[in-house]
Figure 1 (cartoon, one colour):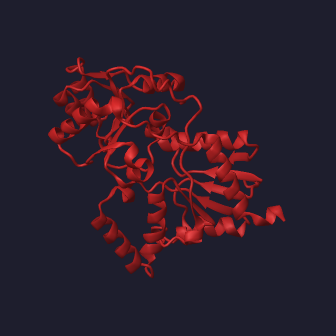
Figure 2 (tube, rainbow, N blue to C red):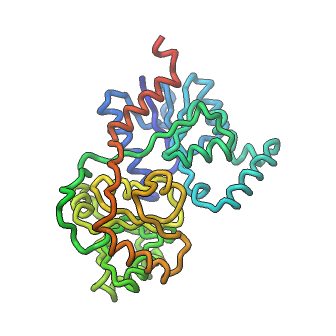
Figure 3 (cartoon, helix red, strand yellow):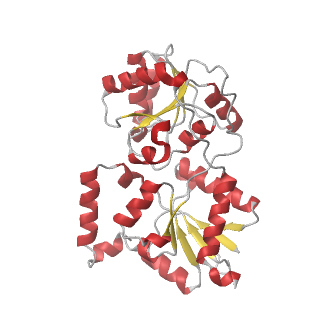
Length: 335
């Protein structure tokens, strides 16, 4: 079986967790013996049996793929929708139901969930949204989470952790990293921030950098950490992991920290509750600086006694589940 990976946004334009997810899935599938290629849009001679499309495919894309005998497994991150309140989600579902017969409905590709051969959700929460908002047939929705690399193995559970909370995230508004460091200073909780902006001249990043420069006694910032072994070491030594973003799908950094046995403080969003339940502490995503500072202080004090999260699946385990899904959508290949 040959699987073709496709994604509409070039990696060179923006880094992030989705890129890591795609790259690690590719590597794990190849270790499993699955033939994986990047879909070459210019190559009319390329062949395959399954397209794994990371995003929401257009209706014409699905039509052409099916006409060529290709199955399409679609994996879209429902980050925005999954992070909205119940009223906003209800309103979006109502709009989708109302516009089903309009040309606008087709331009939004909302019917893609009914026309793809399978849809991959990272969490039970996203699977519910695919079924309830986009009317995806239940039998086509499969929950397969992100994995973690083997380097993120737990440390000694009895080992002594350091004084720093750690946050690993892109320095951008929706991750609320500036608001987090401001709250950390207000709560006098040492915080180690790891990450980089999408662009060095981004105004939000400039404000973040200026604030950090004047509060080095509380906030530590060294940019991104590309060495995965070093990142795992930081997680194993941290007092706790914090991610207070306003929107998220399934945070890879939270999974990696959890794999290292790090206590978690996350925004109180449905994705986090569906994955970690009572294994994490929560803070409202819309909390102001003082309320966030109160959450941080309480978490900091309680972190040593908080439960260790369950170890997430490895990328090899994720790949094995995807391989079964590819076989499921191509039964003719096993006859």
